[in-house]
Length: 304
Image (tube, rainbow, N blue to C red; front, side, top):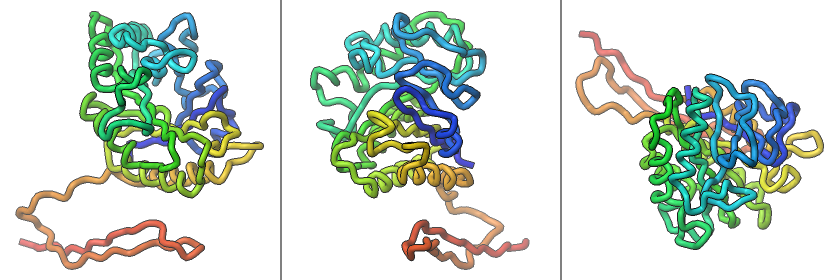
């Protein structure tokens, strides 16, 4: 079964009705640090700036995110623009107090004006948002002999700020990030800017990214950020109903629940099974369009 979960988040929080309608595994409420809704599916998002928000209703075993875009200036980011070591130190200190599984990092990156294969372009606001920043942050995270009874995973944000919906650009960043951290990756915010919005193109972007992630055991979650508000074109829930995009996100979640990670075929060698035939077929939607391609393999057992 796939490790991947689909989440959502929205400024000022999501409602219980929205969570139920979307069928998401988890959610978080950036811009609002109240428990709305509460329950085991809510992932607390805790700022590294202790003057900004306290730790709320967390406990041993909780999945908690520490840090929100530490390299970005306030109010959206935690403001450690040139202090990645300090940001990591703060995350480690918080993690040692809470324990359990924590998601650290949550660095900002986007597609606009970025060099291929990296998360930064050298501009003032992004100069420290790539692997050098990540490494210094990790140095701070493990710089003290914390009680280390937490297990860290690594979160990252990705926003597409053009109307190209380039899923391969996002995939390239996620692969680079995993190669660097060598651990589980949570895409804790995935969003698109509302201008130039094309709902069909956005659905294709969602589909390509999610179906790629299903085949990566280290990809643990993709959280659709209803940016900048739930009332924008990229929102999933409006007027107490799912939008067409929300329906699509819900259906994607249902599609992946029964899928297992893609594995490479075994190397040729001795086997008790002999290939007889193999053929693909497509499922057809009600509108006559092909949706998914499947492959059936028939093998014959060779008895000794």
